[in-house]
Length: 130
Image (cartoon, rainbow, N blue to C red; front, side, top):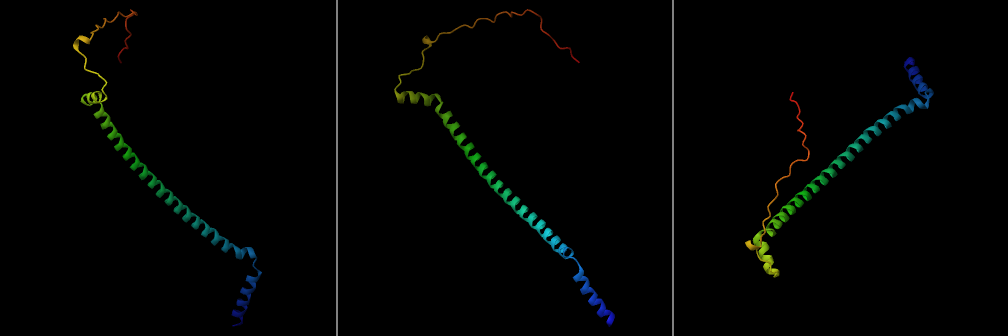
């Protein structure tokens, strides 16, 4: 019984004799571990939020692109409609410009001259086949 009591007293004295740095080490390890885990969790959440924001931006820009493509197709069809000969004649009549189709007697035909001889009379260069 006395040996058990001596061991208990010895343990108490050993703890009292230990330096403060030895007792702080487990606390520092726990703080560092919690900081690393917490920092990783915060980084993960920030990255997920960034990915979510980028996804929304991509979706918004895809919608804008589709709208612009639709507007472009609409304007292309409007342009094609305005360039039709019947439509052009209607506009000429509406604006009373006095334009009429040309008569065949008003056309002058020009004959294109024949191609001139080449000024370089050297024979052409050929590449030998393999």
